[in-house]
Length: 323
Ligand code: UDP
Image (cartoon, rainbow, N blue to C red; front, side, top):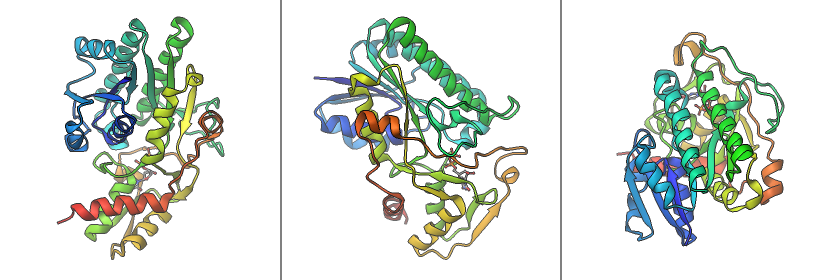
């Protein structure tokens, strides 16, 4: 029986991935320090005899080494994510992201285990390409702006993973995740859809940052999590980077209008300058559309859920939690 270690498995994406692997009859061990993940995401899985959870840190090297040794595959999702968190706690973010990946790759290499490293579309930086291809140049802002530190930390993770592949033949694959949304995502660290839905359901102003003309493509976690499982199960993915996401593009202002319409909310839409929302000199990406041809060619990947499905699921979840 395949044993999967999922670092960050109590997080939003990790908990969906845990369910998928358990449904396939595989074993899942979750290692999560609950810094941004939540125990409630995986509480129901504890009844499954093939599931085990350890509340600890990837930085606890002895434990991480032991868990990697007893696993066949490692999904390294543990990271500091979310624009707000990254800007407010940059030291923690940089250290966690770089040192955590270093530890995982080191022991995966020692015990010859297959690894997936979760990266991010942030690594493309402020590129203004129409679509982002995995081989495109990256354009980073200055080191004085902490947002780019996150992008750089994940790019270092990618370089390290690819170096292990080249030099030590480690079977490692990199997934560059674009905006991923769905049930269990918290808005606490800045993510726009859970925030807009919460604001709409409470009748609070919907906070559109910048002028709202920036666009994003939102993918449902129910498309993204199976793609991660598929990438690691496919022997042809090693040593490569794959974009994972959706190409359905919408401006943030239109997203706000859609959320108001779908919730039937009376909330007003409030446009807030970036410097007020984040900090002086904040730089956002105007546009971010993935080229999905590489993952499509490998796995036949195509998102099955659109933005309507995403909003319906997030609204249903938050609606059922409101008093
Ligand atoms: N955003 C917004 N209001 C919010 C949260 C985010 O207008 O309450 C904007 C944010 O500035 C960005 C987009 O929505 O342009 C997506 O933000 P998110 O943090 O979800 O993901 P990002 O694409 O920035 O990583």
